[in-house]
Structure formats: C-alpha cells, structure tokens
Image (cartoon, rainbow, N blue to C red; front, side, top):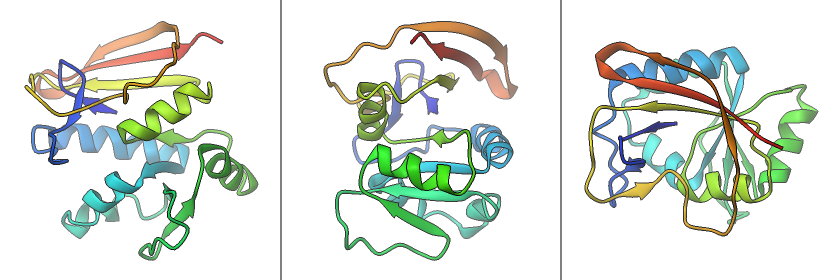
Length: 166
C-alpha cells in the first residue's frame, strides 16, 4: 500500500493525487510478479475513473473486488467476492499461493482482524495529509509486526516490508 507519512491512503473524498506515479510503478511490478490482487469496492470505483492506460499494466493480473453487494456490476477482467475468505478461496482455486491486498481501509482491517495478512509492504510518500482515509479502519485487532527490510525508492519514497507475527 502507498501511504502518506501519517498513514493516510486517500483524502476524505477518496482522492489519491498526493500519491506519486513511482508508487504505481512499484505496485504494478509486485502485482504482476504475484499475479493477483484484491481491491475493495471504493478502490474499484476510484480506479474505474482513471486513465485506462493505468489498468493496461495490470491486464495479466487477476483482480478480485470485495463488496457486500452481490449484484455489483464489474467491468470485464474483474471478479466479485463478498468476504475476505471467499476472495482467498477463489484465488486459491485458480492456483495462486500469494495475493496482493491493496485497499482500502475497510478491507485492510477485515483481513487484519481475521489474521489473514502475512506480510505488509508500505511505500511511504514524503507527504503529510491533514485528513483522510487511514491505512486501517479503526476496528478491534492487534497485529504485531517484524521488520524484514527497508529501502529508499525514487523521489523520497521509503518502502517498509514487514512480516506479521503469528
């Protein structure tokens, strides 16, 4: 996930303009390596409005959208799941051993609460956003982390890679 220094993933209106293109490049590199990702409905709705060239870089990536609405209509190349467990089962049936969970706040917390996250990779942008959507929605859970690595990316982005202590 890409975040501001203070843990914001989007403005209150869902706007992510403070996130750099460098983060997108890093995200697509990891997503193409893993081969699949899970987005929430709000993230999907936001991504649909972007220039189509952005999604071309994910054309070979299996994309599952989490939504409680079983009637949600998705564009071609996207698949629907109603719970984190169903999304993971769907991708496991397709042969995937790893999954990229990339938003949003509600989904991050749902997966964390069910102890379904093994690793976290954060790309921290050199920006502070006063108000917005946090990386994790406030829900009752605690996941302890162990730092695996940290590295500097381009344009002052710091990447932190953690494992979740089980």
